[in-house]
Image (cartoon, rainbow, N blue to C red; front, side, top):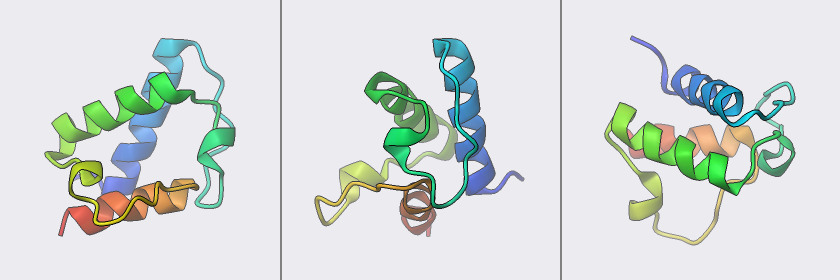
Length: 82
């Protein structure tokens, strides 16, 4: 079974290819806004992750903090999955 992080990175890469975007190297400290994806790409990623993982952490988030880095984005999904 693929880890949540690997699944997220896979979706980032797939959406970037489909949308003709060039991703920067993705590391935990990579800023989402500097990843090469735009807001439409992030919406697609979130929708696909909901289908793939069965969770949407943005619907159940208890605060209004949106993740800023890849690492924070991954942690949001990992915490929602438990």
